Image 1 (cartoon, rainbow, N blue to C red):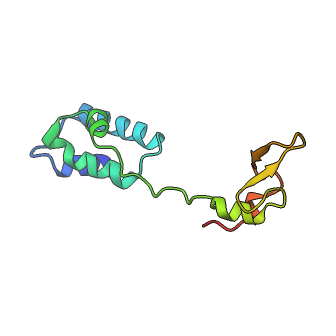
Image 2 (cartoon, rainbow, N blue to C red; image 1 turned 135 degrees about the vertical axis):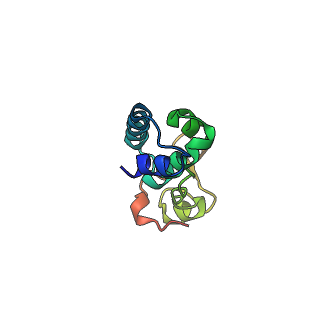
Amino acid sequence: MAVANAYVSHCGAFPLPSVIESIREQAAQLLGYGWPLAHVVKLAAELPKWGKDLLVHAEHNPPPATAAAPHGPSRADLIAACTVCDEYGQYERPDGRIAICKHPQVKLTAVPAA
């Protein structure tokens, strides 16, 4: 496994087989959590400087954040696509009061994202 090889290649001496097996098990656990393989390999290569516990080292060095999901359509786009409300995103309720429209007739897939 690439993770164990990264650890072994950065050790000064060949580690005990039990340590290598522990690194493999901990790496499998991190990969099971969805951590990127490249990041786990990087942590394993750094591990000889910091100890033998990959999970503790990983706890202090999480993977970089992924790009945020794109935002949906803007409020102006929703108002423009809605047939219920006025240009301010408001509508008149049957009792005569003004309310903020939730754009119930607008399908979000039909409105382009900003």
